[in-house]
Length: 342
Image 1 (cartoon, rainbow, N blue to C red):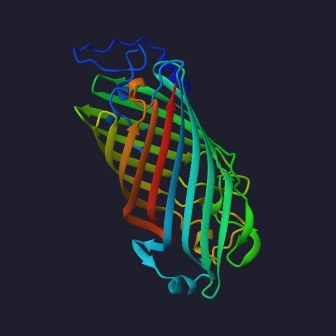
Image 2: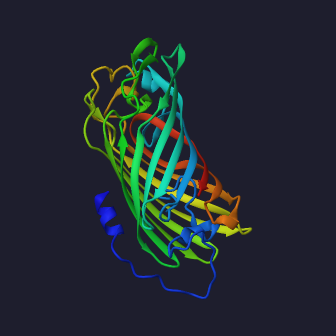
Image 3: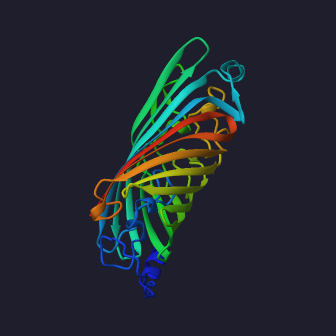
């Protein structure tokens, strides 16, 4: 973060002027994404947060849900009978969602500080072939703190980069009823936190061409240590590309493709039995996935600038998935957000 702050204090050349009037909500030369509704990255896009001017605040409430349908090994769906021939129990389906409250504050016209507080809900239905049960875990997840910087901005494009950390505030050793047992340690994927610090790095680029805009984003996460139970969350790298078209002055529709790769869990928990259920095996967590999303957004008060009061929605589904399974097979994804800026 100190590198970002140092770069932010360096003098900057003023951007080139044109005769085309634009509407911005402050007097600074920055704020490309505040001029047109299609220039703000769609819901769920990587590195798509609103960049603030000095002293500005913005808040957002984001909901995301990922559903899963059974298990997948490699690229093939695995039926319950096959899983139960090796493990004592299997997973029928799962649903994981999160409400994330985020605050953004402009330290300077180039650097924005962020803080995100997630409230997690994780639920799976398991079976031993004759009996089914549902296990639920919910509560506070790992809080994210970060900073983002405008690396380069012109009248038609913007490049940003950021660094951050996940603070280990979520439970990583939660116990409960699972796989026919009344009080046991829950699997890795049902824990709300990683129990250790994780670093994040991200970058995004936006280009405007009339009523059209496009963007690229990347996000990487890296556990910095193992937790006190001897394991660490998976490493991950996600990249996405999106295109958006503005219409009716304050509306925008978008299409987005996202690819994600994630490793297996590093280390293992002594309280989990890898022969009880595939979700308890630290070597069956990793994989790769590609999702497609369609989105829609509307600025409710466009006279105050894009993003000052904005609703956005996106829904998607996987078109490719290859897991070190058997692992949870992704199904539908949903993203909803409300942004409010001051």
